Length: 378
Image (spheres, rainbow, N blue to C red):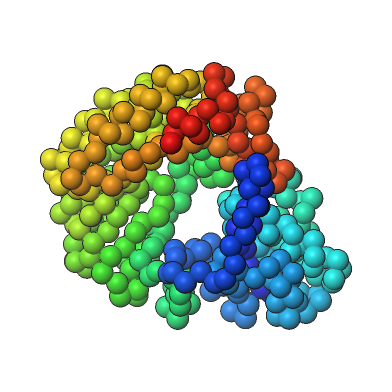
C-alpha cells in the first residue's frame, strides 16, 4: 500500500470578512475535541501518518513540506476539515501537485460530501464516506476502538453514538449529507468506548441524541451503571417530562437545543418543527427538573427585518435562568454548504460576500443589509 498521511488543516480565514487579514501564529495550547472522522480512519490505516494542523499551525508551504517528508512524492495525502479549513486544504493540495505531480491528494468528510463536484477541481479524488476511501486503499472498513494513546493533546470526553438527522430544517446541510437517515452504533460498542476512556464526563456529539426513545432508554440504563456525567444535543419537542427525568437520573448535566428563533414566522420559514411556545414549555420543564440547558439562536434569515431580530434578542433574555447557559447574543445567519437557504440567498441575490468559491456566504435579508443585521446583533 502507498504511504498515507491524514491532515486536519488549519483555519486560514483571511478575507472571510471584507478587509479581514488578521493572521494568528503559534501553536494552540488547549485540549480540543477529537477530529473523530480522521481518527476512525487512522485506526483502520495502521501505518498512516497524521498531523492536526489546527493545533500545529504550520503555514501551507510548511505543511506541504511535512506531507512530502512523510509519504514521499508518490504517496496519498488525505484532507479532512470543515468549510473553514477548506482554504488551507486546497492551497496545500495545489502546492503538493506542483512539487510532486505523482502524489494523490484526497478530500473527504461532510464538507466534501456536500459539494463533491466543486471539490474535484481542487483535489485528485473526493470521497463521500470514509468507507469509500478505505476501499480505495484496499482495506476492509471496521470500527475498532482506537488506542487511548491517540488522544494526546485532545479532550477525552467526546463521542459519537451515531450520526445523521431525519429532519428537514432549511438552513442545515445535514439532509444533503446523511439523506435524512440516522445511523446508530451498537450500544455495546458505545459503552465499551466510554469505559476505555476512563473519564468522569462524556459529551455525545451527534445532532439528535434523543431521537430514538427506546435506544435512549437503553443507553441511560447503561450510563447509570457507569456513574458519569454526560451532555448531549436534543430537539426541543423531544424533551418531554419522562425523557428529562430519565436523562437527569442517568447523569445528564447539560442539554443543548437548536431553539433558532423567537418568531413563529421564522420557525415556520426554516421548517424547524416547533413554535415559540414549544420552546417555552420545554425550558419550563428543564428548569423544573433542574437540567441545565443551552442552545443557539440565528438572526438575519432571508425573511427577517429589524422587528424579527429584536424579538429574538428579547426572547433570549426571557429564557435566561440560573441554570441557563444560552449565549446572550444570537449568531448571524451565513450560508454554509449546502442547504435550501444556501441556494435561496444566491437565487435572491442576497449574497454580499462570497468566500472561497462558496465555502461561506455572507448575506443580507430581503429587508436589511448584512451590516445592518450585524449592527442589530451587537
